[in-house]
Length: 346
Image (cartoon, rainbow, N blue to C red; front, top):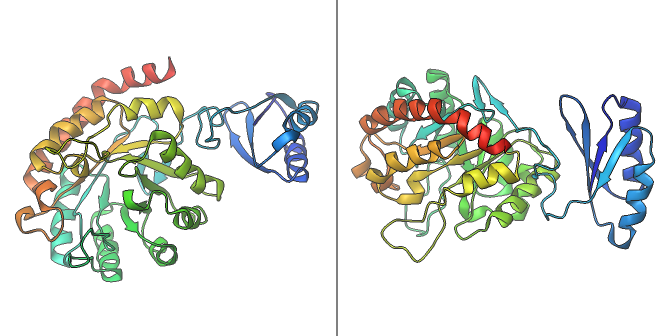
């Protein structure tokens, strides 16, 4: 349920409502807007629901108490009407800005990463991506450089000024990766790894949550709910395609999910056309389509020699292709951003 505080409600009144919620064995989560505070109430109220709502409704400073019919609460725009905007270094994710994340699928060497990082920042990238721990379908495929890859990412950040995003695969990796990475990525295979989601909710780092290979929108938002309910509201959703009967592309890119998510949730939405399509010639047009559809950013794989890449070479852009694509994305964004904002508010 949602407790909407009156405009001008005092801090003492807000805290009194929080204490009342906790005394009922429930958990309060605050969303502070420009004019009022909304408190989301999370927990199992069972048959006490009407009684709890009635008690909260008469507390000083409370304007209204309403139930939430959706299973996702804290990710819902009902709880947090304003867009969540995430600041990472000098980069803003959400709030009408365009984030361009680029870099190699897997970090193979210091030279490969540095060449890519220098090239993408010159072309206009705002976040450097790079996989140090790689979940691979085959146990015989390249698994990444581990913490050596993380150290190369830190060096690339120092050289370029770009914040870095990299994937974790298990809870034990989060503390060490969070010491160095600006954004923690949870991949599609781990979208419903609930211990990992809960652990990611306990660190002070933004988390980019990729959509599961066959996940519905609701399942995806419920996975994000695990992170936020564990204490971390800095979640970025990444649409990376879902598995369908189609075989000409690696996955099917669900671009309708972008405006739909903007209607359902306050979280920023990024699109990964590399994993969605699996073919580098399809990446630029789908990246443009994602931006035109209102995505807050795109994430693409870029490699100095993709034909010899150790991971996902066929879907990785060359440095030249990324350099040609990035300014086009910004041009498209400048034209569609006012329309997308008006549509989301309609």
